[in-house]
Structures are given as structure tokens and as C-alpha cells.
Image (cartoon, rainbow, N blue to C red; front, side):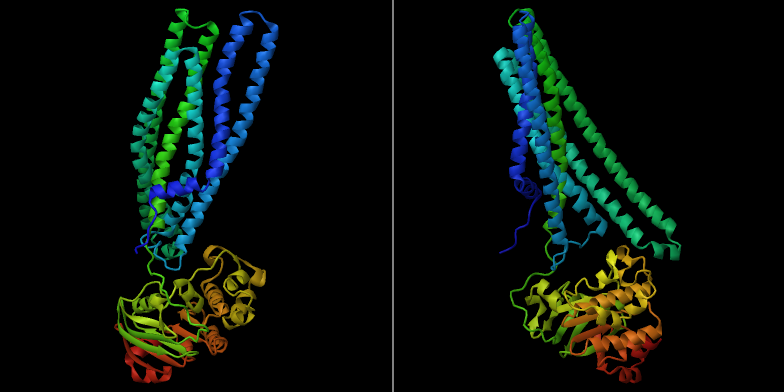
Length: 563
């Protein structure tokens, strides 16, 4: 059975449904506020008819007291109703953000394909906020409709003609407002798409700022961002014009309805069909209608933007995983035997390899793309085009990706550090294990010795406050501290000096003794401590032997490793 994925409508429904209690309470209190607002003009009319025109002081005090009670009630209901509505909106936004982050971090992957990190961040912030705001909009819309209904009932009691003007005019106004919101929905979606792209490009440029400065590419980068930003600005202006047009037209139509109520009320008063107080009430109610009708126009705009953002969120949540969850259990305990059989993926062709439990294997790929393809298959970021990768006799494609991560750790060359301290980065996946052996093996002691607060020194985003060599050693220590049964490390020492590299090579061999370890590298220091090395050239396994033997046998190997 194929999995079912959410649509934009599903996202909206679940977002509001998850906050049903808060939305209902907020709508109830908001409706109380609107009823109170609608009763104020009616009470003013009663005061005029029963107290002012009759000069009855007692009646005046009584009805002014009633009016004061109504004011207190509508003020309190507004305060607590708005609070409940905001809580519903914020909680719905939070729930959506968590769902998006959970999908992006899902072991099966796939959500990040074709999307820059900045675009995903924009969806998880701005789009989630707009969808969350739908809860508040629904509360406000229900309250506004209750206010209009109360106004219509009061006017019907005053005059059937006045009541019918409101009852017949409001649905027409709502229908026209809905039609006017359609262009806004389309342009809002385009606005968010361009804003997300601009955010993604900006994040991408900031990440590569040092490289850009090094190659003198600042002007090209600025031109690229300027073009992207201009596109985003044009989309934003188009959406703003659509919203301004919709708001202006709805306001004009609302004014026509209010004018119609005032005109009909004035004619009825002139004919003696209603009293002076009732005329004042009718005019007051007509002016009151401006509030809830403006709210309904705002609700239409919010729903249009919410639908557009919900569609973008649904697109991420509905992204199929790059790899599926298998039904086989992970062997326990994990011995760490890894087998590749006729593996073909990307540039790799018919790769056969047996890695014994506890073996320290070196892999030299003359083409970096082949190394990247092998890493993706070993970490099961993707399944091979043909052949298989087995762990203790079980194909990885038959295992849950989350379980694979608990047995196989692939530490990529460009792994980022996190904000926090050096110690927190190293222990991120270490659990209760002592991180000191891993830090010693990776040469982190040399790093912390030069930092102001040692291992407690704060690390900035992506570790930019550290040098390249320092980042590599901390990242390697983090991988070693995780102590997985199988560890795959890709070029962990490209930014350290040769003396430190030799010490790290010895440290890796000692700390990983008895656990399967694969070093994808061209470093002679690292390769010299391995049990054997696999040479991959033109996507195929050429030979496997100890490092010294391959140096003697293959010119290709000598070129890749010693050149």
C-alpha cells in the first residue's frame, strides 16, 4: 500500500483541529465581545427613548449601569478571547515547525533534495507562522459573524426592512470578498517562494564567504544575490498590491452597506416608523458593522495567505523518503562485518568488498566523486543502483535507516560543528561514555590548550570561531566518542600538520581496536596504520593490499597518495 501524504488542506485542517479547544474558547469569548459591542448602540437608543426624552433620572442611572456592565463584560471577553486565540496560533505554529524539523531530520532523508537550507528555514518559520495564524483568523471570523448576526437581530426587532438590508447584504459582501482574495492567494504563494529562495541564497553565500573572498568572487556573489532579492521584492510588491486592492474594494463595499443601512433608517425615522432612539441605534449599529466587516476582510486575506503557506508546508511533509524503512531487525550484538556485493552507484561499478569485524580498512578513490558515492551507500543516504551493502549478513535496504545510524556512523569530511562548547560538540552522541579517550586520539587536547576556556570554550555556528584544523579534530573526536560498531571517516586530517596527522593516525588505530573502521583518505600517515587498503580507480576495485604493497605495485596509487 502506498503511503498517504498530506495536502495543503490537510495541513490547515490538522493545524486548526489540534487547537480545537483553544479556538472554540477563543471564539466563544470573542463572540461575547462582539455581542457586547453590538448591544452598546442598542442600549444607547434605549437610554435616549426611556430616559433622555422622558427626563427620567432613575431610568437614566439604571440603563447607564447596564451599559457599564456590558462594557466591562466586552472588555474582559476581548482580553481573554484574544489571549486564547494567540495561544492557539502560537501552539499551532510550534506544532508545524516541529513536524517540519522532524521530517527534515528523518533518517530516510529526501526533504532536503532540491531545497537549499535557507528555503527550508523560511518554510519552517514564515510559512508555519502564517498557517498558525489561521487559528486566530477563524476565531476572529466566527466572532465577527456573531456580531453581524446580533446586529441583524437588533435591527429586525427595530425594523424588518433594516434587518433584511444587513441579512441580505452581508452574504453578498462575504462572497465578493472571497472572490477578491483569490489573486492574493496566488501572489502570496509566489511571494513566499521568492522570499525562501532569497533567504537560501543569502545563507549559501554567507556559508561560503571565506571562499568567495579568497577567489575574489564577491562581485559575482553580490550580483547573484541582487538579482534574487529583486525577484523577491517584485513578488512582495505584487502580493502587497493584491492585498491593498482586496482591502480597498472590501472597504468600499462595506461603506456601501453601511450607507444603505443609514439611508433606510433615516427614511423610516422621517416617516415616523421608528423613534429617535431607534434611529440613533440603527446608525450606531451601521457604524459598528464596519468593525466586523473589516475583520472578515482581514480573515479572507489571512486564509488566502494561510492556504498558500499550507501548500508549501505540505509539499515538504509529502516528500517521499530517499530510502524506505525495511522490515528486518538489526542484528544484536552488531559484529561489524560489512560486505559489498556487485555494488554499482553513480561512478562505482560492480564493487565487491568484504570488511571483517574489527578490521581497520583504508580506501583510496582516485576520483572524489567515487568516494562520495561510496559514503552515500554506506550511510544509506541512498540505495545503490545495483548490488547491495550488507551489515552482518543483512542488506542495509532491509533495515530501518534510524537503526543503521545506531550501528554505522559516517563522518563526512565537511561535517559541521554546532553552537555550544567544544566539550558539548564532542559529547553530542557519546551518551554517558567518557569523551577523554576520543579527544586524546583526535588531538583535541592540543586545541583546547590554546583556547581561553579550554574544552568549555564556546564554538560559534558551524565552528567558524575555530581554525580548519581545529574544527577537523573536534569533529573527529565527536565521531570517535560516539563509539559505533562501524565507523567510516572521510579525509579527517586534511587541515592538520604532518606531525599531528601521524599522532591522530596512531590514536585512531588504538581507540578503534576491535571495532570496524573505514578510512576514506589519500593520507599516507592514515593509510600506513590500516590493516589493508582498497584502491578504487575509474569506479572499480583495482586491488587490495597493505599500504606499502600498493605503493610498490601501482603507479596510480602512488600518484593518488604520494603526489
